[in-house]
Length: 469
Picture 1 (cartoon, rainbow, N blue to C red):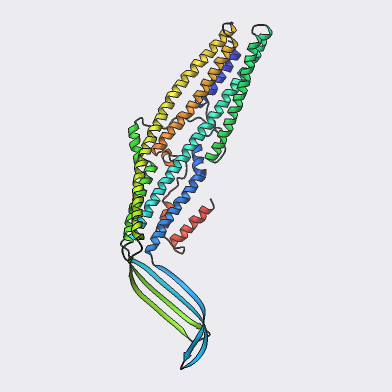
Picture 2 (cartoon, rainbow, N blue to C red; picture 1 turned 30 degrees about the vertical axis):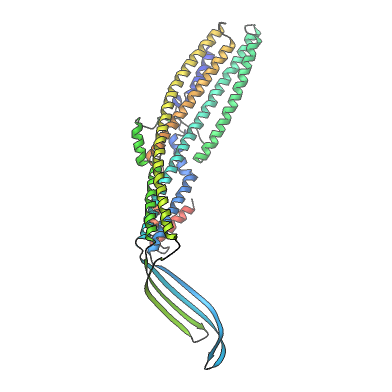
């Protein structure tokens, strides 16, 4: 075999092993870089952080029910009519202005409001776990996008090398046809193989463009030169242990547990609503006749006790509804646990299959390359036809493409295992990012601060900063 053909064959093989053999360049983007960008740029994360802040505000609103409620009012009215004084009827008109202020404070409601505060807090904790689950989805999508861009780029490279080699094959076949060593059929076969390779290259380039679009959507920017991942994440081979870990820490499980606790509190609060409520009330008001001498000043202080007697069965229905919702959440927790365990088992099955596939694909590429090189030598001696060589070359191309796909599937499967366990977060991966603190906003609003308080002013600065993002 000529040295030129050996060089071409080595070029095809080298394209396959880009993920191992290519040296890292100073500007190459690593998988960790991609995950950092996905974490920082994700609109989905921003959306769900806003949902978490809304859940935090629900706590503040329920807490406010335990505080004094103060309202003011101002009325202006024109009064007119007729009245009789000492048997003499006369009409009258008056312009009256009245101002008042009232205060109401809940003294005792058998714990209904406190139970709703606890339920709101449990909902906040559940929403935090939902945010963790979204974070895992964002990062897993970024991993898949990164690997798919590399996969399609390598497939394009392999097909380009294959196309160059087929052009040389066609030129060589035509030269041999000119001297009568092969027939016109051999030339036509080489031409058909070249055309097929051109179509395959166009398809691979289209796949790459789609992979870039997915990368841009998942990561928030265009991909640069992507360096190969250096190693797979460390995983235990103990599937049962992984399932146990997932049950303890997967965000879907923790979220369901908090929703069950919130539903329990809601049942108790609904039961407390049937009982009486004790409130302290006070009010002050002042009224003056405009351009007149009449005025009115009055105030009141008191304690009121009130409770339902009959509301058509509405309150007992609310209790039963809360019980049904609690049972729904408990059943949902059971189903979530089963689903998480199944997801872990499926992820490990995919990982084991990907590992076996990669090992088999490596052997397939080695064997296909040996077969291709041998058939080319035999064809030069007349022992093989051009069709045999082209078939062997296609087998080599298919083997190379299969190995590239297997490499991609292996990395995606490994990170999917982390996601099913609950360890695919920026914190678990130790990404170089400012980790979002889900408790920071809650700590500012949990006591329902008013705007003029120091905490309220600090909260206002936080809100202005969020508005600039």
